[in-house]
Amino acid sequence: MAMACPSSPLPLLLPLRSCPKPLFSPSFASALARRRLRVLRAGNSAVASTTVAAAAAGDDEVAKCGRKQVISLTPELYRYLLSNVREHPILRELREETATMRGSQMQVSPDQAQLLAMLVQITGAQRCIEVGVYTGYSSLAVALVLPESGRLVACERDEKCLGIARKYYEHAGVSRKVVIKQALAADTLRSLISNGEACSYDFAFVDAEKRMYDEYFELLLQLVRVGGLIVIDNVLWHGKVADPQVKDSKTVSLRNFNKKLLADKRVNISMVPIGDGMTICRKMTDS
Image (cartoon, rainbow, N blue to C red; front, side, top):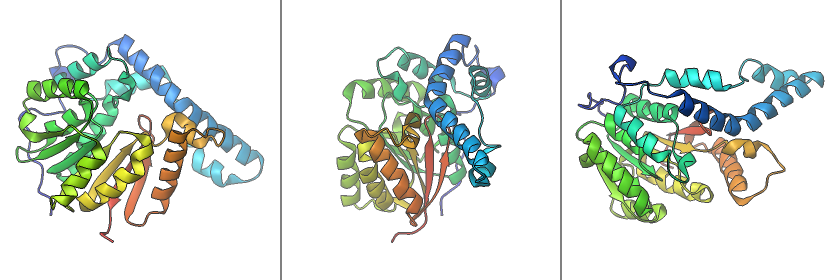
């Protein structure tokens, strides 16, 4: 049984009034909202069009499922959402530094990081794995809420990105909780299995090479205990997975992976339209 997660001496979730300045400047919120809109617009438009078309055709199954769920995420609405995210000041510092880097769109959004941290807290997770660290925003969010005895294995091959992540782990005082593995993630996961660590992890987050998702998932299923969670990022892939005309290798891999998860009885799943889409998998059996 997983132990309850005690309070961290450096909590992730701080009341807004305790922060020395606004969490999100108008310019940042607008830029992030525009990025999120680009990610979701294709999916929202496709679903809305499908709903209208289904209703017009007399097929009300899709229409009934979609009427209330379809929402237009305007910049103003996303700004409001961000204003209701509690972000630790050190996470904000890391996010702002990462925003100046090439490839900064790979970083999870603040609302995604908040959800990941809450899942770790709810499950009482003590042993976690992250596949794809980038500059460390999501791993730092998780490490901040882990108990003192908790550990996060951070898998990343990019030395420059890990340098930034290490700096912020130290700044936040959580370096002792993070075990960095600089190597190909699949090799690291296989090594953990070979070292007898199967079924010993409570939580895993995957945000790495999309064409490797199936392999990562199968390896993590061996490492995560029954009842543990595996969270997969980018499952909506800028709306491309819903467009049959898009057939590049990453989109096809993600589309096939999503189809596999839907039919996989080893896990219970919930695909959540946050960020670029996240699927939360709960392992149900060792078979």
